[in-house]
Length: 355
Image 1 (cartoon, rainbow, N blue to C red):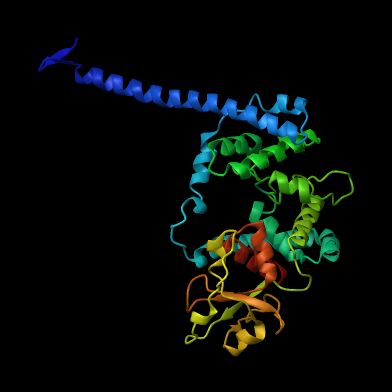
Image 2 (image 1 turned 180 degrees about the horizontal axis):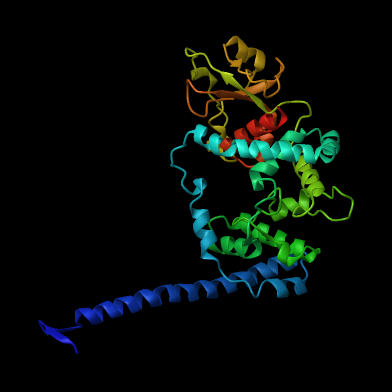
């Protein structure tokens, strides 16, 4: 029954509620159908580009048609800091507490001891310190205990379709298709929501470029082989410019009266500028020492920096808190993950593992 009011036929409240509920149910379904239709159309474009990149049609016809859009990974991507450029930078101390904790240090030392022979071989070949490789492994997947359970092909396809960072994610999707085309099992390709996989959390393009066979079986198995994992991490760091024999940095005390206006970094990085703008300009360690910036080194952790080494200063929690002098090798850690908190924690975890 309908009720009449001022000549307008209006439904009673219970029917309005029912119609509203029905509309709310229909809207997501319609949006979902639209996503599926657009997603399928987009995958046909990907298929053409992947064919041009050398992926076999049989591989594409096996992998692409069953894919469905995953809205969850898009939501996760939109929560990332780069999607919120004006968000305030938090303090480093709480992050350090949770990422350079007793359990991670203890397990890192155990992994270091267990893999000592392999680590020694990779360090001799690459110059990358064993503790740095172990710290990367520890930070990325807690030494292989959790590598992610997202279907990375589906994730990359969904992120590419959404479009905010399409060039990045479409390129990684085609790289993943190349991996399958070259014999990597489709079921092997699970990992983080953003497409990183295996013990070192390599993106597919990084795997194709830098993964290495460390145990001589003819495969670069970064999922199950410790030897391949460490050889691949070491190779990544070499290709990113790691300098043999140079520490990543050192914790320092900064004098209370130090004037910082002339130390500002005047260079603008084209890559993750918010990360690099927190660094000072470059000075030699001797120049920093003349300004009163002194290494802490009270616990014996870390390695001393030679006077002629060029370093930048970062004060992640502001004046009065622990600061760090950072060498060019710190920039290599940033190449792995462009986050000051990440790179500082990797360096500090490595120092703790080796101490």
